[in-house]
Image (cartoon, rainbow, N blue to C red; front, top):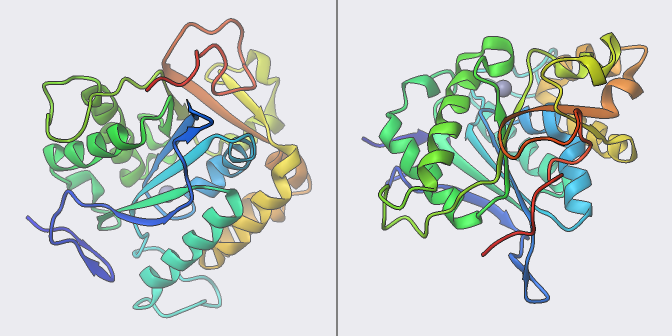
Length: 281
Ligand SMILES: [Zn+2]
């Protein structure tokens, strides 16, 4: 079975297309930390983790993103930024611009069709993601929660595939030719629908599901620029952030829920790597 990514045909369905590679694994003989983001569409990374990506890349953490589809079934904006036929190529360009702004070192385009991710063969995407996890060896992985945040079927699907692959990557019996086994220390989810509203609606210290609240105020201008880079999605960015009277507050914190990982000393922590040891080999 061959999956087509719009604009490119992956002759080998296990292959991922890598856009950019500014990441390095070894600094001064020590492994650097790596954060892996697993999402469904271009723009998920910016809406949900844009400030977090900026923060960690500025701290020397290698941030890697895998995006499963090009979001080619989405809207091209009102007025339209491009034709529906142009949308996949335009969204890929938007993604490249956004990740550059966010300091993301690598983007892997997994090549699945928008709105059809749920029907991807589990063994195929498992092998693809296991290979990616073993290659980039992250300490922390971020994806959607099991409800996909807003129940979007592609979001639910990538959440399912993420936990499947993260656990399989640690088991040497899976795909022995796909690299050395790697155990992720912590998997976190983006909690619920429009998580940025949690910062408005209540006390994050007492809100269940908020295990990490990352202060990204220092990077919110870059996050806003990355949101604007997804020009075809301008309505969503406007509605959720820029048209809101407390836009600064909504952009200034990003929240996460621990799916698995070491016991937390308190909730919420402000660091996704909090309580973890140094990066291993
Ligand atoms: Zn999405």
